[in-house]
Amino acid sequence: MNIVLWIKSFLFDPQILLKRQKFKPTRKFLKLAGLSGLYHNDSMLPDEQTSPEQIAAWRAMTGVRRWRLAEGLYWSARKLKMAGLRAQHPDWPEHQLSDELRRIFRHART
Image (cartoon, rainbow, N blue to C red; front, side, top):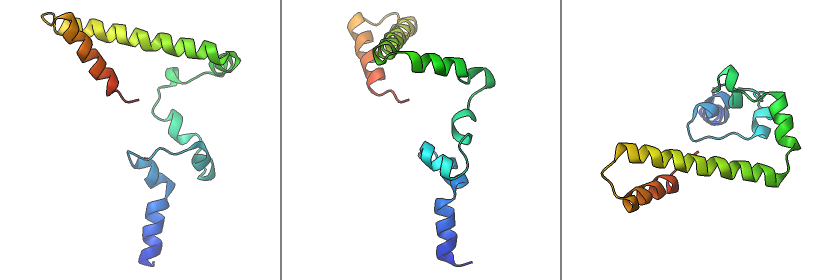
């Protein structure tokens, strides 16, 4: 096999690309590669997967309703993290806890 063809096949092979940590395939890429169901559900347990009823409920919601739910989840996560920080560092003053919480959420990744 020609070395250029081997390198191209290595660089553009969908299975190899999916194994790369930083590669985030699009739905179009997965569909064209014949791997449409491979990326999303493989890392999820069966009881964590979104049901058709849940998908229908999300689609039926208005954008404002979805935004409010997401915002509520965000503030709940901040409250939970603050409670955890207080438990880990009971001697820290409130301003230090707030600074640490802001730092953690500023550098958070999905």
